[in-house]
Image 1 (cartoon, one colour):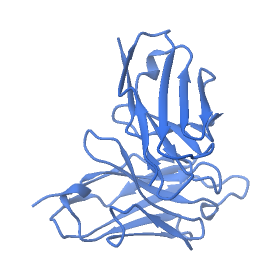
Image 2: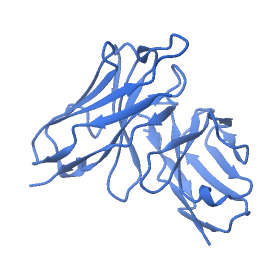
Image 3: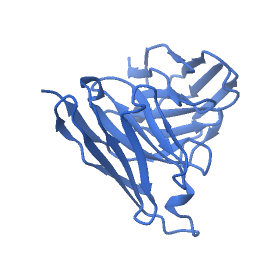
Amino acid sequence: EVQLLESGGGLVQPGGSLRLSCAASGFTFNSVTFSSYAMTWVRQAPGKGLEWVSAITGSGGTTYYADSVKGRFTISRDNSKNMLYLQMNSLRAEDTALYYCAKEFLSTNYWFDPWGQGTLVTVSS
Amino acid sequence: EIVLTQSPVTLSLSPGERATLSCRASQSVSSYLAWYQQKPGQAPRLLIYDTSNRATGIPARFSGSGSATDFTLTISSLEPEDFAVYYCQQRSNWPLTFGGGTKVEIK
């Protein structure tokens, strides 16, 4: 069973930076590897709905971003370590949210399951 | 950007009743629509993908239908554990987008 564990959230001042990490485990069956799946970051502001943030293909060769974070956030992955990252720069108050990482459900379909439990990012002075 | 509009915002029903949730897209997404369930304090879980395919372990009381711009998630008979918030998501175009959610609450 694949499990995802996010880390790196915290309190940061406006204009600051944070790097989120997502550790993936459980890729031990049928030669299926972490690199076979796209990964994504989705955030949820307190009491609000889901907002897609960014995605990256299995190889890491292609990345996608929501307009709200383009130019400020960078998604990356290290397939040798089964790790996903989100570098967040120039943070704003409206970036305050619980950030989830999620794995593609089936290869190349961009539906996501499972999800981690999230890491909270608070941008405030 | 494709905007997904979910209705109603809140659905008040009793256990055993049928729930019908709607998701409307601002332009055609073909069949590239999914539904997720989120319970309080938990991460979302994939229920339905590609309009009508149930994800692993999802009970048969959950079904999806629709095409192009109009989609429906139906829960045939609500169980106590089904009271939650449901989101639709499209993958037809980048950026990926989610609907605003429908809360299914106990009446």
